Image (cartoon, rainbow, N blue to C red; front, side, top):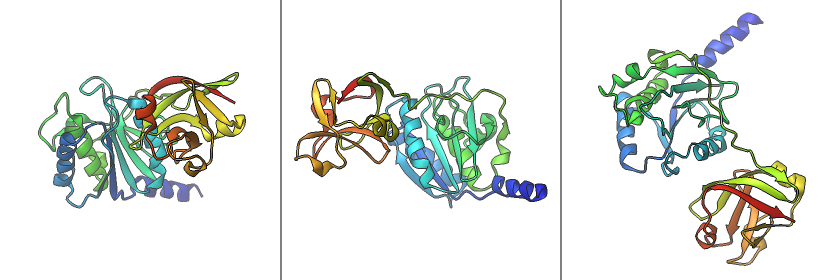
Length: 268
């Protein structure tokens, strides 16, 4: 049995990763360069753009988004480059479990996915030999892109070394009940203007609210958008399995001035 388990672990460690996802705060220009590096190393690489409009340097938002989508992939390299410490002393880590691989700076972006992973450090000098550069501002090009390409070619051992540091973890889902209020964060504003929070469905099930009052505005708690009239405010549990503040067929962020950050909301 022990020998079988050892063989199984070895097989999983050497599995073929055939897809790369990218999550960054880059916008467009830097993204194209990063993709070019990946494809110059592995022309057969398959790349999926998750988002490149993460708020600049918003590590907590990136960690939330990564936690929300990674499980829909298998045998995939998830690259997350939200890196306010680029060029500094922070490590770049590769974390691997039995389904996926993650490459990211050690700044908390992997907080919700790293438990149970095998963790290694990416040697930046070895990775950057593929571009011939090691910029102090663009490790996405010089380190992350080569690392991702090499993983898909089953050559990650060329750039990895033991990780001896401490994994940085953020408390993403730290919403808490205070009497008839919830202290929470808006983590993400989507393209529709929905304010996505870190209030998990489990907490909503616990308090069973009928409405929320935020900034003196009433948001009835409903199951679906069509439970209110067009243009009316509402809250519901969205696809992230957390509470969202919305307007039916409208933009709640624009109308109510929602931004990411910390808030308190009353519930009834």
